[in-house]
Length: 289
Image (tube, rainbow, N blue to C red):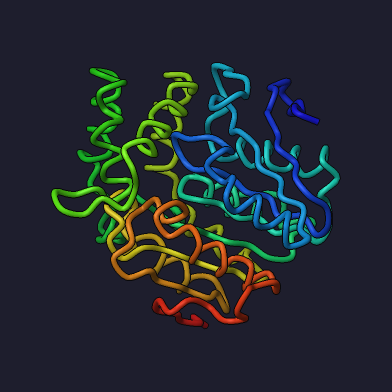
């Protein structure tokens, strides 16, 4: 089943590996389901069914003109669950922008069929800096993302992915080839979807969605995340979700599923009950109640 069709007729590309309890992986902006490959393989090998799909407008999915708001994107997630048969005992794991789909699904679709959730370097609950969200990202910074993409879409990604993966003057946690892969993957996305999704993840307030998380929830975030600041997102999400488990990766950048791949994969498997060592990694861990 390489494709499913959403309720509004959009084709979504779906990767479905393994068998067992389903774990649905929702990728970040501006990548594709392939960004989850390391975790999807580990999940399938551990006896889970790993389902990852390209968000509308990205990767191999269709590029409609509309539908890049989180209500529609959460409906797409609901359609993926329904058409893959992952309608019970599912775990939803969203990276970056993908955390928004998880949050909106939990409220808009009342968490149907979901037994656990993960918010990984996620934009939840609110990215925008406001008077009541002082640790968020200033409006002018969010605006500069769209402006930079419109001016030189292809050049923009070079500096963006350096911050994404924490590449600095001295440190380089990923290879040049990894950055090339990320840039090439992004080229598959349409300009309209890229711009509209940037508006959505930057301006959607998910604080009202947090009470809908009534399942065990893992929150993982890097303390050096320059793309999605931890104070406005990971830490705030963990405080707003009853019983959430917060794991902070000291010094990790936004793209921690790559830079901390083995560590994160083991933490995810441990959360799901199949970890290699039975314990969360040695980063900071808080059970927030």
